[in-house]
Image (tube, rainbow, N blue to C red; front, side):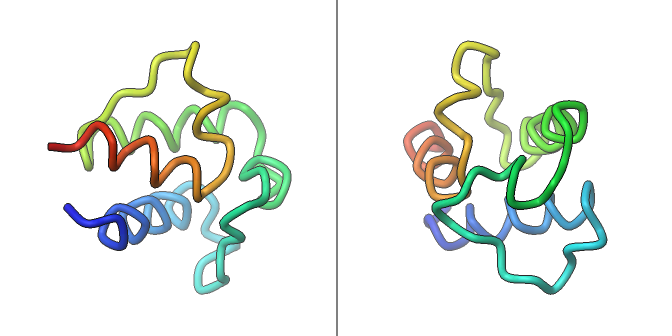
Length: 81
């Protein structure tokens, strides 16, 4: 899976948990929770959705490593083989 495919998968998951942002460009370097105005419950739902596809679980101690879209893409790219 390329980084672009990972990004597309993450953005699609974001649109599912925050449909009011569908079609908007998601800022790559801004904190996702703050830029999307989603709470920690929705952020956890996003990570849960991403555990199913592309199949990478993010342990709680790594939540800080997936705070932006850019960081999340990098995190998943390192773990998808």
